Length: 262
Image (cartoon, rainbow, N blue to C red):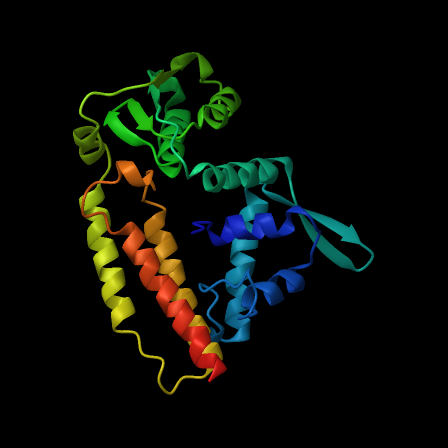
């Protein structure tokens, strides 16, 4: 399941075609569109939706992720080089989750205090990529993100302070997994999500409102997923509920479209 944020979705949406603000708003509000964004709930009113989307676009412009291209009387939006980097980063996270090759990828760093901002940003990126923390400056992942991290370190001028280690075997991996990632906290969130799925009622609602409810659930699961390392199945601890939560959402989706056909 994708864990892309609205800002990332906008950037990817603009990647292959220049669009106006109105084009983006229409796509993000279309209940039948792949790009439908549940955070822009159509029940809020069109003017409020415009403000919400405008806020996200202004953030992307302010931080240099998108540029304006004026053609005649229309203003088109296009990702900047910084925006392209963000797109590539986001998509790399999505693509690499999958089959495990049996190795562990470890990042060790000792970054001077004068690079504190870059060091804090590195920790955020490591968490985004699903790394678990062995110690304060030692992070581990069963997936290889060294290329992305080296590129990030070079841009932030901290490459000399990072070391990258590949391990074929680690003693007591079960203990390592339990202590490096907060699976207990994740399971609590998944349990609440599944309870909400079980209590969901579509009776009396039209199809568009049902779609909106489904998309809100989908967004909630995506939000939880941003804190889930999505480890390979063989490494997931006993009792992990992430896969079960996804099955709950899939069943609701099937039920949604099955009832529409009746």
